[in-house]
Length: 242
Image (cartoon, rainbow, N blue to C red; front, side):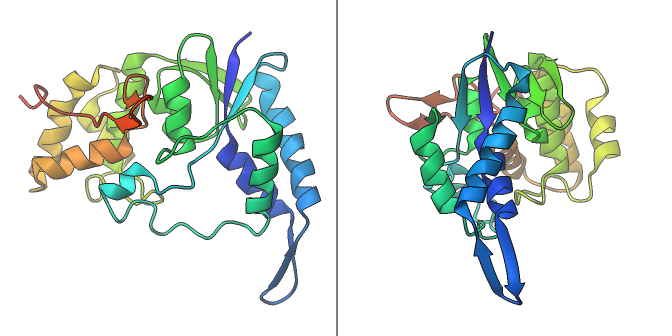
């Protein structure tokens, strides 16, 4: 058995949205009991990765994420939360084992808690940047991400950016460009970074901008956070630029 690290942000949003209705234009109503039932139903489905194992619901902090301290654009365009969200969240926090850390997103919490005996449960593509077991509930399949594969996907994100999250990467660089720059063989970030940095420089983008994109794209991993001090160890490219 493993401990499931569940992306509860997704479950909360989905359940809250489905509890809403609109009888007249601009007049929305919601049913929090329906939201609770929907949450439980979806949680049971997501636990198929290990129905008898322990689980922890990982939830984003109410305090602004640390990435906003580096970039005002980070997730600046996100829509407001569904009407039932606050009540549903309070219910979930009181009912289930949850992990929530100030200034961290659910993705970061899952990444920090990951490791032997753990399985991340999330449909979010960003979780491919974390080494270990990953269960995508949409595909209903567990995959094991190697450390080199995780680094490859992280650098892929650094190149392509993520317009939904509000960081741009290399302008107009998509999947083909990323694969051309990185190659198809997963390798450590230290081996991939020089090619990524060269691609940024080819677009007359400064090195500190490339480093910022890498920090915004990096989901925290074990060792990136001091639990006692609540301090984040930002990734440093020192020794990786040659």
